[in-house]
Image (cartoon, rainbow, N blue to C red; front, top):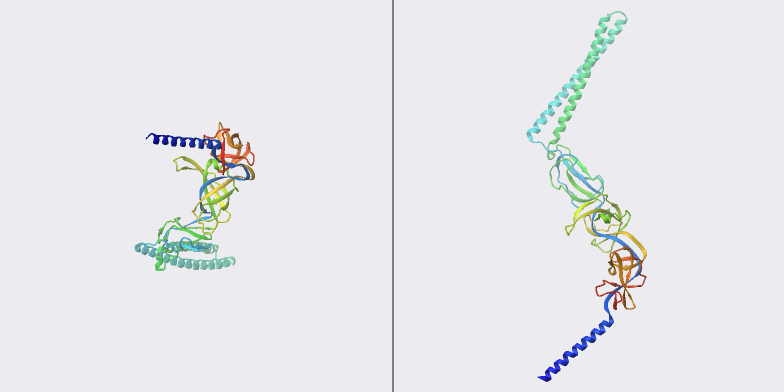
Length: 393
């Protein structure tokens, strides 16, 4: 038993000695750190947000009049040309009793028109007769064959006949207008019976059908949206950004579109920053003021449609040649940017002046030089002068 205890003691002692030796070796190497390089390169500073595509020129075609909409044959995706008929709206059909009343009114108006035509013809004949008698009396009065009284009587008869003709003509015009109104009221007959002309709704522009709002046959009111048409080749991207980010964006800035469902990055330009912000609640329940930024795509790829989700990077600053440092190496103390540089195997605390920053790298204005190595994600184990074992990024 004593011999076993001695061997156990020796084993534990050996393990302790080996651990101590290992600790000495480790401590001699220093704290393991990951480093990155200060490099001269191009730097883009961008605001990255989610966006969605939309058709730049979108037309909502509405019913021009109230009536019965015939079933629309077009479907989503169909191509239409400018001015092509896309829908037909027939006059609203009347019930049989009302239709009979309208027909009777039209017949009565036609009869009054015929009577007015007859009265105009009669009044015209009387006026012509009165004119001949007045001319004859005037000729006889010059030769003193008839008295002045007879001449004045015939002239008065002519003036009266002309007034009666004018009155009959006005009555005829009124009868014709009444007949036109009665015939227009009859246009409410059922188009399936061959009566009534439809209002033809045409495409305001060439493009493709984006949505058919009213597909089936039904009664619609004037102004009811029927169909939406747009040019899917003229796509743009709507990106809503925080209002404090929107003030940094300018029209014409470069935009890069990713995660659109295809390969590569799409190029675009900021076309407009909408002047009116809106309130939105974030996923964390925070109320935010956001602004829509409109990006025009340089070349929309085939297959990308309206309403598709994308990720947009809006470039607000760019340089082709600038000294940069990884942002993961930066930290702030007392309002000053600092990094730990690696010099002669030890961490060296430096104050740096930073300019523009992107997600991954930041512009170095002073404090670091090209080629310097900096510690990424520094922990509490790192301090000025601490020995480190660097592993390059």
